[in-house]
Image 1 (cartoon, helix red, strand yellow):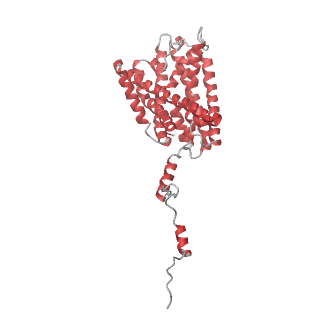
Image 2 (cartoon, rainbow, N blue to C red):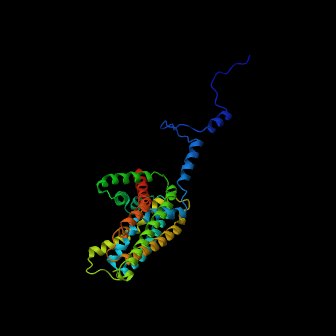
Image 3 (tube, helix red, strand yellow):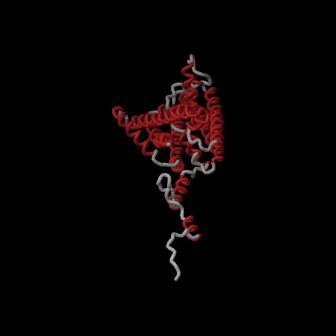
Length: 342
């Protein structure tokens, strides 16, 4: 009679191979689930694709949102300080400097794809200390930019209502609107708002130029009576000249968010098209806005210049400019929130 072997047998090759074909679901060292199922992989891929939908055209739009706002209507005041000749030369020259600066920023991003903010660039140059220092500077600048848009929104609401008692309320309302408009998570979605932003600022600038031109033509003596000058104003102080030049420089500060925007591009090398398109658009708008309004209003031009268009027209211009005030401000909120979140 055959004996029954009760000793344990080694697993057959088929069992062994089947066991090896089943992936380990647990990390034996930590006891945590290590497997990523197909659904999670699909969600991760979809999420990654969602945040890489930015082409060069939409990059141009979000750069316009970042760069062109009511600040361009402070340029006529800068022209009044510096004179028409210096104002035009500086506006055009600094525009090309801004394009070159953005080109360098883009080259850094291509060479170091992990750089998502200026703080990361600070780490490349100075290590941990550079990251922390530049990060604080970067966050503060964006926060102050949002604050300036909040203040501009308050001024716009005050101008529209003629109610000076509600300035605090209007400030809170402006802050809430800036927060709500910053909700879209990706810059590709912000670009949709960017079209509204660009139309808003274009119409506001056009209204101001046309209104001041009509006023100049209707004044006693016509256009020839406007006291604009090709040269700097008399007894120009260093402080006034410095402020006027920095206003022009500030108008070209679109590179502050470029690292963050390029992070979402599906073809980052196309950034060159965007910065040239934006740079030339800015140079054209800024030069025409500064020169024409200064020529129409003269040395008494206000900042922002739409305040020089008369009470009724300034209300219309501020109303048209409300979208650009809040859309351009909110994109800075999105960028700084991403940096802080990490």
